[in-house]
Structures are given as C-alpha cells and as structure tokens.
Length: 173
Length: 445
Image 1 (tube, rainbow over the protein chains, first blue to last red):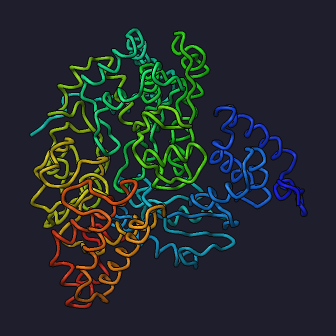
Image 2: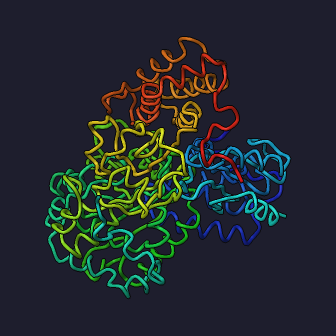
Image 3: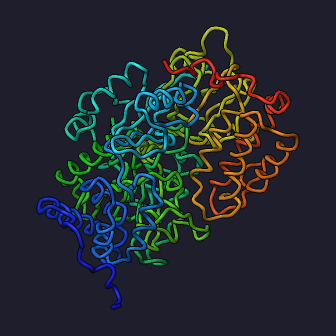
C-alpha cells in the first residue's frame, strides 16, 4: 500500500458533506489555518474537530480522515485528540446530549436527585447513549453559585428545580 | 469587618450594553490601554509589579514577575505569545465565565496592555469547551475590536501588530494546567510538560509564552486607569486589588461576589452582602476555601482572610476563589468521594501515581460510603494519597503537574480532620446519613 493511501481513500458510502456543508467546512478550515504559523497546521486540531462535529453532530471516520489531510497530519493523531476530550463524539450520540453536573457544589444543591429524576423521566440510565437522549454525568460546569445545573447540547441551564426541568424536557421533541 | 471600598472587576457589570464595544467605549473603555501604551514595555511590567497583582487562576504568583521571566529579544529572537487561561474548571470556581459574559472588552483591553508589554503579536484565549454562551459573547467582542482597528496591524493606532484568537477546549480539566493548555493549543491531547523549562522560556510552539488567567488580565485596565499604587493599596499584604470568589453549597445566597482581600471566609459565608449564612439551626461543618483541590477547613477555621498568603498557616490555599460550604448534616465521606471521583476522571493518564492513585482513592471512598469499609482502609487511603503528594506541606507531589497534589490534598485533609466520620461509617457498616447525605439543601425539589 502506498504511504498515505489510508487517509486519501475516497468514501465508500454517501459523500460526507452536502455541497453547503462542504463550502462551510472549506471556508472554516481556511480561516482556522490563518490563525496559526504556516508550519503548524496541526495546531488547528481542536477547532477543526469542533467544526466537523458542528456540521455532522459527531466525528465520523471519513470526517477524521479529511481533517487529518487538511491539517497535514495523521488520522491516528486525530483519533488521539478526539478520544481524549469528552466533548468530542467518536460514536454518534443521541439527538439530545444532556450533561448533568454531579460535582460537589451541585451535589450539595440536589444534583444526585436531579440525575435520578432525569433517569426516571427519560427512562434511561446515566451513561447510556440512546437514539433520542444521551444522558451523562459531567464535571463541574463553573455554575457553582447557580447550582444545580445541566447542559442540553451545550446550552446551559442553571438554578434548576423539578418545575424547570419539566419545562425544559417538554421543549425537547 | 472589611469593606469593599471600590469595585475593580465588577464595577461596570450592570451598565447597559457593557458587553458590546459601543457600551464599553461609552464608559471610557480602551483609554487605560492608550495611556499604558505611552509607556515603554519594560515600564508597563514595572507598573504591574508595583501593583502587586497576583495570578487569579489559583497559584497567586506575582504577575509582573512572571512577565519578567520572558527573555529579551537579543537572547531569544523567537516570537512570543500570550495565552489566556479561560478554561475555568476547578470545581467550586465560577468567576471567569462572568467576565467573558458581562465585560469581555475588559479582558481584551488587558490583553492589549499585556501583549504590548511582552512584545507578543499573537494572543490565544483558551476557553472552556462547555462555555457556549460566554464564548459567543467573546467572539463577538474580538470581532468588534478587530473591525474597529483596536487589534490588527496597528494596535490602538501604534506600529504594533496584534491578533487575538479564541480557541475553545473540548472538556478536559487538565487543560487548565498551563503546559497542558499549551499542548492543547498546539492541537494535541492535554498532557502536561515537565518544568523547567517554564513556558516563559519554552512555551507555545517552542517560543517564550506567558499564560495568565482571565481575571488577572482583566485587572490591568484598572491598574493603568487609576495607578499601580491605588491597586496595591486596595489589597492587603502582598496581594493587590480585590478578588472574585464564588460561594456555593449550604449558604442561603450562593453566588459570585467581588470582595476585598481582607474579607474573611466567615464574612463571605455569613455577611448580608454575600452568602447570608446557613438556614436556622445549621452550622458549618466543613469548608473548601479555594476550589476542590484546596485542603478542607473545619467550621472553627473560618476566620482567615481570602488574601493569597493567609492560608499558609492552615496548610490550605486561597486557590481559585471557589468556596464550598458543607453544613453539619452533610456526609463528609460522600462529599470527599465526589471530589475524588473528579480527579480520578480527570487524571490525564501520563504519570502512574496519579493515573492509578486517584481511581484507587475514589474506589476506597465509595466502598466506605456504601458500608463495605474495613479496618485498614483509612490507612491505605492515606498511604495512597501520601504517595501521590504528601500533606502537609503543599507542593511535594510526585507527578509532572499539580493534578496529583490536587487529588491527594482533599483526601488527606478530610480524613485527618473528620476521621471520626470515616471510622463511624466503617463501624456501622453504613452511612449514618442514610439517603440524605447532602445536607440542608441536598434534596432536589
């Protein structure tokens, strides 16, 4: 096998991006690369992975290969980074990723009870990735004065009560 | 009691449109930077030294001194960088987020001053991945300042190029450690580097780099508006200025407050302007004073000032200003388990004592809390902790970075100060608090 063949292999299935997404991705990568020294393209790894995840909802293997080639690095480096940071999804998550802080400041204001309440309402277990919900415990979200808190697809909600959680869940169709 | 005579960081938070360039400029914004940039770079650093500004990220290191470690261009002609640590993730800490949300230009003006002093033409602001809204506000502020010509080819009209970029993290506590932050900025997983060399000499892309906390840099505009002496006098002892602290847990009014350096923990917890005390009948059993890695204090140790040096006699630290209060009905084992579990989750895996030790401590704590504790468990727990980082004193950790210490210090301080609570769990073979381990506000309603 020729060197680099694994990263340049064309996608076997559907194309990764729609034409619009492709345009967005290309422009985004060009902008990101302009933020770094010319010989340090791979420094753009985190923002490039975030860009990919924003477009696709997760980091599909073909996307990681594309990021590797644009940043002139290896796909292994992409996986190393993608699996180190909890906000990157190398497996497709449920439609709603719900991150519940259960660290000390939130726990002292009812976070364990809130997690149990969510498990019951959503009929799921923390850590289980379902089609609709991916409920998980997360670490301190810097909202300690406004505990307990959670994030739904990165949108922050704080000073939560049962009534507020109910209202929030009603909006998740 | 201490009184906050003047607000520094939060002064303008309630002004309309303060987080836009127009709103910021309407209140004299960027004038302090214009004033500062009339000084030679070395004189700016001297002013910062005189102000007694100390790092607000947790270590309390003198900022001007940190800057002065950057070698001269003659000695090292490589480009230099400023990296802003906005990766606020120490449990209990919630302050930098509000600066980004409410007054982002205060940070950007500070960046203009710092970069000019350091000769840095690029600044990266590394913000927490989870900060969706604060990051959006900051991005808008950077775009406004760049479009206005504040940043770019001519910083505030001077012959000095400065470009400022925000890079968002992706959920890794370790990236708040300055060398892990640099690794992450270089597009890698956040594995801390051995020091020395320190970032001021070999930092981002191998170049001299200063890493400063958001609140630290946001203090600069005030220092140059009102003078280093004013800032220094506002403080206490060797800590200039005021500080932002967050009080959480069992208090009636949790929140983030700007306080005078000589405010005591007791005042923060009980004063009407701050935490407003605990509910009727409850007392403080334990208090973590500076983010979860700071050794815990008992209810008898609250008469300590929030200034950086005051915690040394108590073998604890002022840290990042995250004050977590536990009342007399909270379970100490359960509280410590939550803290330990965090360090187990967030250990980056590079050094064996931390990678193996943190989960080991968390497992023992869970076992004790669930009523499966055995005689000897506490000695094992303390033994593991001491092998990661003995305490006291602070700072003897066996790992590359301080995350090892951060996980070991709470274990040793909790078990030493509340040993009877731990032993009671083992004797009774259950948690005495049953299904109510979280104290007075612990129920989800």
